[in-house]
Length: 119
Image (tube, rainbow, N blue to C red; front, side, top):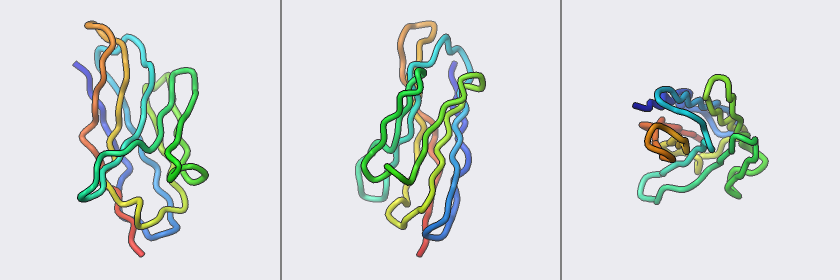
């Protein structure tokens, strides 16, 4: 079994910062990549940022220059540092794990953490 435990969401004023964490555990042989996605009310799920085990990162245009993704390979934990937050960043943020386990390559999603940015 694989588990993803997300934390760090909350309510913050525009211009503020939050740091999301997502810790992966369980039968994970190796991690290919981890990432963050978000879904705002009435909108589709969208990519925020991803990072590979080789530390190659990719950001949505909306996140560039404000968000930083990092991966602690020892702890199997991905972080998303979010600065200069805007009300339009309000969404449920989901952690994604692309890994190799006992049945081969697989993908797993966290339960989501709410981020609310007020004016």
